Length: 514
Image (cartoon, rainbow, N blue to C red; front, side, top):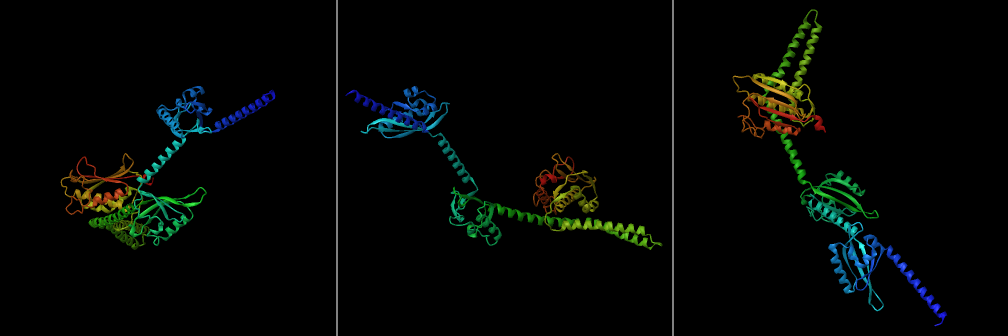
């Protein structure tokens, strides 16, 4: 070969080398831009190349990695398993993968999947193994969070008192949670109004509900009743619309709850409350009958004064000349006494009337004074002296005037009757009002009668329990139910001396309003 031919061959070799270098540079650039960590192994598994990303990630020098291999940065608990998996892959000559935790330069271990595949020459012989390691930690954490979220949702569904549902755009049920308490109630393909019994009886409610659905609006706590063949159940349901990624309406998802027991309990409570009102009315009428003499005396007093003042007025007018000023005074007194009689009658009518409860701010001292006007003669006829220690100023309470009058009348008449058999000492009834240490308003009625025995102390408020031979045993039971309905308490604290004390405690109006 002459010099010229040698020059051409040298030029071709240099060109080939330049192309190889360019190709290697391009390959290295591609490798560096791949987010995964890349390495090459010889057919026997010896590491011959490791990319810079692996070195940067682990913080290890190239020489150490080439000498000890990938396992140097693998978690100790995973190193043996990863090495064994790679040996099996190399022996099989087929691509494979394995997972292991890889230590980052800051000491944190993150889970990676290590994949490797054989590179072969034209004859099919394996010349090297190409491997990549992909960070799975974020995906693993996302999957774990998703599993936790799914489990949490499943737990909610399993422990919820209702069931989850989904409808299509036509509002027919297409999916129900497996925990549905009444699977026959919400069969797929039916709509809510297909199983409701109140569509005709409450058309306005259903028109508003259908309008909200047509407008794709969320709804909350919609209550309806099912048809009789499904048990006439009361269902409370809440739902919201859902859409696909393009914003197309797909239907509704929500939750339903069987509230039949709650509704029927409320109805039973209302019926019981009505029965209590009826019984309380009977008790008031009975009490008024027993207080006939006291009521008659209370009315006769202003009526007698009216008659006397009318006679006096006529006398003043018969004088010569007529004493018009004196006659005017007599007429004014007649008007005052007439108003007194009217007030007494109105109070008695209110007690006898069967009316709904009317809650309003009240001065407890005023209610006591109104009661004393009714039972005053009863105290006189039984020779009972009354002592009243009413606090000059009391916070107002929220209550029904007539019902609280009934309670106080009952407590006062009980005290009078408890002292009816007393001889040899004064019959004395004490009524006190004030505020206790919790800023509640209290009223205490104390007699000096026979008192309450220890065995009866826990029984006196029970229905039909009475220590009186002619008693119904309902008075104190009704009184306690009235007081508790007002948010208060009625008790019988033990007396230090003789007799018994009944104490009524009520929260102040501002506390009840809050």
